[in-house]
Image (cartoon, rainbow, N blue to C red; front, side):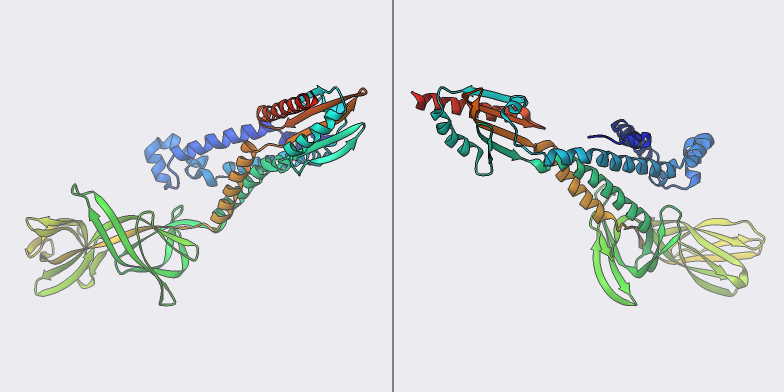
Length: 444
C-alpha cells in the first residue's frame, strides 16, 4: 500500500518522534516531581537561591504540568499518536479483510508449512475427518484446484489492540485537560462551628465559590503515647440555602464528596481562645482573643493579640500577649490564668488578667474538583484491555489442504501468527503427527 509521502506527515508518523517525546515527557515529569509544585515565588528564591530560583520561575518549573512547554509536548505527542495510527490503519484493515483462501503453492511459503505425501487418494478421505475435528466447526472449507482447503482464522480483531492503546492515551489526556480546565485544587481552614461557602486556590490563593456551604461541627484528634497524632477526624455538614443536606465524618483517605467536589482531611491546628481583662485606671474592658486575629480598644488606641499559647505552665494555661499603643513600640509579655500582670507604659500602668483559656481546633481541608476523572478512568480501562490484547492474544491463520499436487495426493499443513509463533507451530506439528499416524495406521 502506497504511503503518504508528505514530509510533515512522515515526520509526525515517525516512531522515533514518539520515542523522543515519551522520553522528554518522562524526564520533565521527573523534574516536576523533584521541584516542589505550586509554592509562592519567594519559596524558590529562598530554597534555590536568586539565580536558580528565577530560572525555575521563568521556565515555569514551579507549575510544570500546567506550563506552556509541557502542554505543547503533550499536544505534539497526541498529534504523533493520531497520525501514527492513521498512517498504519489502512494496512491493518487490509490485513484483516484479506482473503485467507490460498492456492497450495502459496501455503508452502507460509512461516510454518509441512507437506505429507500419500500413497493413495483413499488416505485423503481418512484424513478429512481428523482435520474437521481438529479445526472445529468454524473452519471454512473451499474447493481449490484439485482438492479441498480448510481455513481457520482466530483473533483477527487483535490487530486493533495497539489502536485501543493509542486511543486510550488520547482519552486520558482529554480527561486530564477537562479536569485542568473545569476543575480546581484548593484548601480551606475551618474552626469548630465555622461555616464557609468559598475555598481558596492552591496556586494563587484566589477564592472559589462552592455554590453551597460546608460547616465543621466538631473536630477530634487522638494521639499515640509519644504524642504523635494517631487519628484526626472532622464532622462536616453540607448546607444549601441554609438547609442541612449531608453529614459525614471524614478522616485521612475517607473524604466527603458532594456535587463532584471532594473534601479531604489534610491537617489540623490547635487555636487558643482567650478571655483577657484589661484594667486601665478606673476603666476596665474584657476582650476575646484568638491566634487568628487581634482586638482593639478604640478609645484608648490599644491593640492586643496572642503570640504563643501554652496549655500547662505550673498547672495553669499561659499565653504570650503583645500590645501596641499609639506612638509606642509593640510590647510582649506573658499572662498566667488567674494572675494579674501590671505592665508599665509611657501612658501609665495597665493591668492584664487572663480570665480563661480553652483550645479549639481548626481543621485543614484539601478541596478538589475533577470533572475529568471518569474520562481518565475510562481511558485507563481501555488501556488495560488494549495492552492485554496486544501481549496475550495473537492473530492466527491455519490452513490444511487435502488434494493433489503435481498429480500426487498430498496433505499440506500451514500456519502463521503475528505473535507467539512457537506456540502455533507446536500445535500444528501435533496435528501433522496425528495425520501421519492416522494415514499410515489405517493404510496398512
